[in-house]
Image (tube, rainbow, N blue to C red):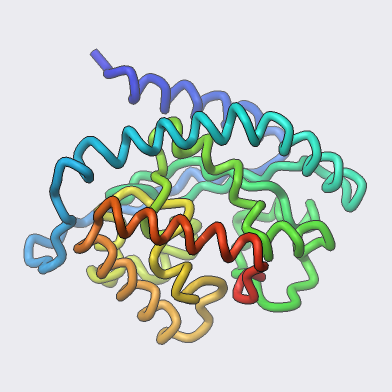
Amino acid sequence: MMNRSTSLREWSHSLIYEAVKESNPIDDDSLEWVHDSEWSLRPRTSIYTLVGKRCIDVFVSLLIILFVLTWLIPIIALFIAFDSPGPFYFVQRRTGVKGRPFFCLKFRTMTYVAVSAELEFQQTLKFDCRVTRVGQFLRRTNLDEMLQFINVLVGDMTLVGPRPHALAHDATHWSSSAYRARYLVKPGITGLAQIRGARGATIHPQSMNHRVRYDHLYINKQTFVLDMKICVATVMSTLQGDTNAW
């Protein structure tokens, strides 16, 4: 018999899929998870990573959903509707823990025609003409990621961890065991790489290498104190406006 968290995840996935399949093409391809027995990277194991992290995820995501998203969604949806035609949300299949894909939620920040062409994946570049005026603000303040607290609640994501990438993006790096290792843990809304500036487009291999190194460092050092520092730094970045968020 499936446990309660698995049932909740599958139920939420079915709702999300039914809501978007008519308006957004969904890529059903998945990346094959290949575990490398010679990996030197080992996720930190403690009471916090085994139990505490999930308890905090559920508590915080419920608070955000009940006391923030209930009024924030209508406001942002209204601004998006006035700015450009199309739905206020964007659903993209991204890679989760151990390569399992999931439906990642975001507020829509690009023109609907460009966003709908998910099979023609392109990284968002600085001054990207596809990004709307409202989308620029949402990206700069990280508000476009707020819907991912729903992903956290159902168990696809965690508050702090390596950021999930689109399946098409991951496919270009999947042959690297070091790159795959960043998915040994659940992806997060924010992470060490993001607060250190290793976010945005990764046109040059060095950019991705920096991100992967930060992700490896985090996976080895997961603690409550580190997660709180990352969360505080993310909130400060949101209030100040992140110059690396395009």
